[in-house]
Image (tube, rainbow, N blue to C red):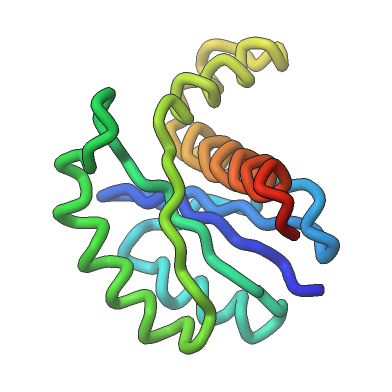
Length: 142
């Protein structure tokens, strides 16, 4: 089986997470500058087989797309040129930053380390991907 890859897309940075090849659990991979995302993804795809890319969909409390989609959509369109036939799917990312901070606190991370937004982005990408896997399993799919 191929991996799933998720992106927590931001203006400055993108957190990236991937599953194991059995698509059971997600782990944080890295955080890259948004300006280098396409190069990083192209390099990763040259080494690893990826079945699908999941991108965090920022929504408001009412479930509507947030203002961030203004820069995310063009970024994803550029990414599609790198990924070829690999499907790119959006998945609700509400509260992932809050959950990432909570995970950092619960994990005993010191306050100074919790201020590192790159770590928050990577953890957020991991939460997005784990939530995607759970939702897929709840629908009965694999």
